[in-house]
Image (cartoon, rainbow, N blue to C red):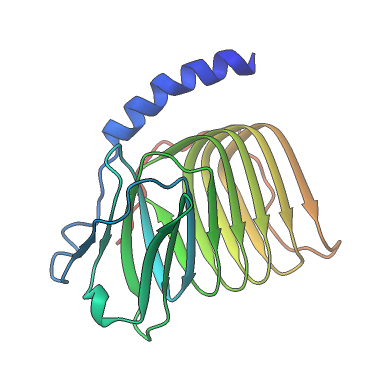
Length: 210
């Protein structure tokens, strides 16, 4: 059954990539845009510091920094298939990442990662810690979430298998997320979080970013 799902997934992924369109271009038009052309191949995303990343699925991978990147205490680097983005400037650095495929997202400090449109992947691991935040609209076969610190994860979309691990002060919101099979493990019994898995899929695939 899972083999047929993965075969169907390839066709769905092609449609999803072509349909994804960023909804933030006009709002950010007033800021200077720095295009980082050195990034070509990556399937992991690591975001740290005071950064907000807008994730867009696209066959043409690239990174756009909505500010004078070279004048900031910022880093955009690709190494061993991992795209690392960090900034510790007082002003939040906005970065748009166009990625064809990801299998792991790691977020730390007070960084934020949001999807614009639905992001599809066969298998996706999402790791959050500190005071980081993720708002993700995804379509996957396997999704794993590891939520620590005071971080928060909001999921919409759907998956076949969903596994999550969460500590006592982090939060997961899954009101508009559907999973055929799910397992959520708490690192503390006194966890205040939303763990409702809905069979109702979201009617709108595009998140309003700005």
